[in-house]
Image 1 (cartoon, rainbow, N blue to C red):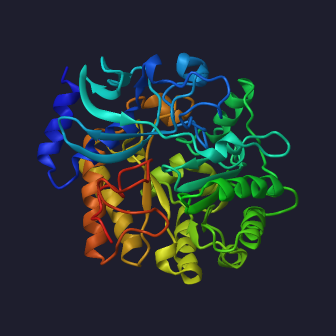
Image 2 (tube, rainbow, N blue to C red):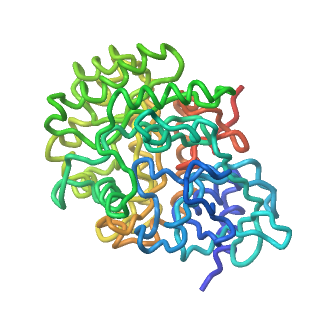
Amino acid sequence: MIRRTDEVEDLMQRFPHVPREAVIKEDLLRGGIAFDESALTDSANEASGEVKPKSYFIFSFDHRTLPELGEAALRRPPEEIVLTGGPYELRRTVVSVRVNPSSPYRVAAGEDGMLGLYLDGRRIADVGLPPMPEYYRHTLSNGKSVMEVAPTIQWGYLIYLTVFRVCQYFGAKEECQYCDINHNWRQHKAAGRPYTGVKDVEEVLEALAIIDKYDTTGASTAYTLTGGAVTSHIGGKDEADFYGQYAQAIEERFPGRWIGKVVAQALPKADVQRFKDYGIQIYHPNYEVWDKRLFELYCPGKERYVGRDEWHRRILDSAEVFGPRNVIPNFVAGVEMAEPFGFTTVDEAIASTTEGLEYFMSRGITPRFTTWCPEPTTPLGKANPAGAPLEYHIRLLEAYRATMEANGLSSPPGYGQAGPGRAVFSVSSFMDSLPAED
């Protein structure tokens, strides 16, 4: 069996234009990280420690269920880690934590007591942990934590407001086949953790006021409003008005404090206009996977309620409302190769995904992507515990940058700085792989 180190170094040599940092980061995101007990926060009170804990802000992003994580379920791992140095001379690289006790990558304290990232038993990077932000140490008037209501990710850059923690696409015939939002809700409730289903507008505002007060360096720059799809109504509101009410309240209370973003379905143009009117600046109508057959198989609810062709038409229509640069649909990188229906070669998968990138980028719309984590309770996760090949992810970074540059585009707004050593976007390496911009 080939050592993971050999595979990683082979890809670094074959694709020298892809930053080494991105090769390591993609491998960690696709396959997860194991944590020694020495790397876990020993704190019963999540807000009392020195390390910012993993908040499970929307999906589990783990390779095991909570009961299977052992000590990592009792003493939470960090939200993210930052890698530097080592034999590959890594520049500062922020990586979202996806726990996998079986991963060949392990975070542990060395003989000097300092944390490092180990691969095949060799220390390959120093590991930094996110400090506990001051605003996490304060609670709302009802006792809820800021982390529960308004967690921050991307090293504090983004406030992630999952205001609806389940999805109305429900069951095997509707749920996206790679998505564990509904199971993540169930597992946290079963574990007795606080995990609010529908967040109250006033609670969100109170949490944001705490962040605004104690984020004295202004690290938090954007917020994302998101959650499950709304196919009917919540509290008498359709999807645009449900998510829009939070944006309206935030912008009235904190005008211009943060860049407002919303992740929602691809909605009709009139609904998209309401998002704009409510104060949202960036719209993420995620298209998930490009290939028509795979979209129909992997996103059955979205195909049934909207349909792939209509979804794409709505994305293009939304560019007339927000401007193409401010429409940034996400896709889940890697599900293109998921068995039993996905492409069987990296060449085929990259060709398909690049076709989708060209379709949108040629129209001024810059998609972004999340590296697929094969969560074990999802159909695709169960069938593909190893995820997609690392080579696919590295070649995607190469194809993404080439397609973007061919269409005269630059890194999308609302993601912080681009470039290796600068990027904070933590759930894929696309920002790490783009050229640094002033």
